[in-house]
Image (cartoon, rainbow over all chains, first blue to last red; front, side, top):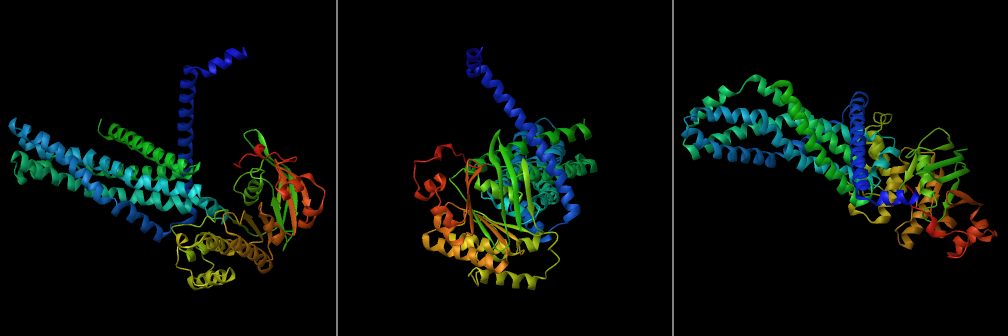
Length: 269
Length: 244
């Protein structure tokens, strides 16, 4: 029996299933920790208040420093999409709908989700590696020994900055995306700016705007909370910092796509 | 009495890394906890400071703060020296409104003077030598006037002269603050220069308790092996596992 068990433990089937079990266990554990931290985050705001200076610094970091790359990504996406569809639509007699199509696409999806991706790769990864480094160099232990709540000190300003700044980033990104679409359709398909703008206005409803802004609030908070949590539970030195950063990026990507699906189902299905 | 540890137990992955450890440290007294790497020394400090939960026993402390000086200083690298020292005064709920910015500035200057580092308030940790970082972490630890100070290998990674300086400051802080001190170390010089009493751990259990002089004189096989740094003796170094 012992030999059989030993051979079974060495088999590929056993290794695949243990690997899957460990991944699932890690998934549930991380989800639990993130939820606990989210609850603690709310408690800390109510109990400790907000460090305004730190919040302003984190808002600058989250919003201002990430803006050039975010706008580049959203602008380029808009140019790529418009350049491929504008000429075809004009040829098929649908030139008047280019602005409408682009405004719906950008306001509802591209601006917020592309901004989310840019924020994850720039800010989320940086938050996760910063807090993970603090963990492995015992700085978080030092915070605890000094009787300061690490959630209040590390999470509150970062998560709040995500919640505050993400809607602003989304608004600017959407404006840049729509303008980039106008320029591209003019250059590639000869569509006049007036025709594009008239059509764009027809495509946007107030509901699109507020759903997009609400979505951006959820995206910003989720990205910051996941990044802080993954960094906070890092271990094993330099390798741990790398793993925490990767985990933060992967989890954030998956989470915002899941949020996007939930919002689409709730408001547009 | 400042701190008393009774029958302390800590288990990691079904292994008792701290097994029935008891000791007492009075005010103005320094206890050195010694032993090979992985014998459970740092775990004891983490249990006392509350960084990890105990699985058994009692830790009785008199009212007041417990401060800790970390092995590699653990200074906040995004804050300058002044903000590092004043961290608890700025961020702690009970202290935040107690001091004005002028008072905090004065306290920081006082603490820096106490550790012999006057006028470096605006420097960042990366601009300081290892010894200076350690002294800044001393200043940060004593800013809340603690009644117990824990030192985790305070001379690790320092040259002999810096180590002597750090040892002098441990003695000086004990006198200035009246605090009970626990120093985790495996340096004989640190034990001789700072400790009033010594506890030796091996595999999570106390194998010797006495004064530094006893440690050198007594016929204890564990201390004999430790002092002579011999590979022959009851302690098998490979058995030790890194503290969690």
